[in-house]
Image 1 (cartoon, protein in one colour):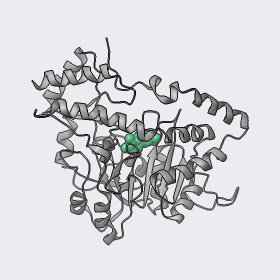
Image 2 (cartoon, rainbow, N blue to C red; image 1 turned 30 degrees about the horizontal axis):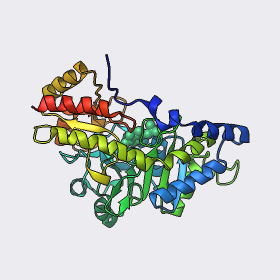
Image 3 (cartoon, protein in one colour; image 1 turned 90 degrees about the horizontal axis):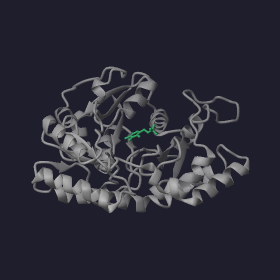
Amino acid sequence: MQQVPLNDLRRSWLATDEEVLEICRRVVQSGWYVQGEEHARFEAEFAQFVGVQHARAVGNGTDALKLAMVALGCGPGDVVLTVANAGGYTSTAAAALGARCRYVDVDPRSLIVTPELVTESIASDVRLVVVTHLFGNLVDVPGVRAVCDVAGIPVIEDCAQAIGGRYGSYSAGSVGAAGTFSFYPSKNLGAAGDGGIVTTNRSEVARHVGSLRNYGWLDRYHIDMPQGCNSRLDELQAAILRLGLRRVTELNEARRQVVEQYRVAVAGSHRWIATGEGCATTAHLAVLVTEDQRDRQEVAEFMASQGIATDIHYPVLDIDQRGLPGPLGDTALEVSRDAEKRILTLPCFPSMTEDEVGLVVSALKALSG
Ligand SMILES: *Cc1c(COP(=O)(O)O)cnc(C)c1O
């Protein structure tokens, strides 16, 4: 019998707060369902939350990546430099534009990219760099920008797992040329469906994304921009997300406290928690790095025997995905390849009970002892 699920959205603020039902009633009865008042307010509040001039809401996080890429001048045949261990969303967005990806390896402890690794991989043909704040661990974007700015290469921050994360004095999505976010239900700020947003300080990027999400129109019924599509956030999601935005800081803190207990439980063993500490992570996922593939299997089986769910984020590197165009350049990616066999995701969500966290902690201690 499963006692501790990986996540349980039936217990989330969204599923349990009566205020959400009031919001739904208000929006449905308003008679305005797409790009209305709630949508405009959400964009303004989101921009303020992240600390940028502009935010443009879109249909999902993958479209946020895709439209930000187009708005930053990326097109067919262009080269995008990114990581191969982040679930394939950037690669999917790039493939949709006809762009090709070259992959850079990651840091062995945090499993995110560093300025040093970007420096080693940057080349004159790179059109765009996408850094992913994987598991909510914040990449040193100022450092990455220092490398890319000299070469005139824009940086996109994929913040789908990092809403509300801070690194020093900056917040996720405020340093790159654009930040992209997802409101898929299981994210740190989840909607009752799909959603996404692009943040930027560049007014031309905001304008471009605003046009692309709405068929490429600048004027109504006039298709002015190529690569336009329909990718909008509906009024109901915008209204719900406005409420969620006021809770997300607290929700992130609850996640961090779960991860902190796991970290203490494995301290001194050969395994570690890849999810970072403090505000430099939003603890989107609690990822245990085991010793090797066999150790991971043993840990997963022991967890299952204790009724604890586990998963792998992510089991396939982008370079091995059959449905993606073949990668460009070096595909050795030693650290990414090694980590792919060792990572194991443990339960982590804001409404986990103390008993549930305690069960996982006991299991980790039993394994370490
Ligand atoms: C979820 C996610 C996305 C994609 O968001 P969708 O809304 O599902 O399209 C992109 N990047 C990362 C890192 C994600 O976790």
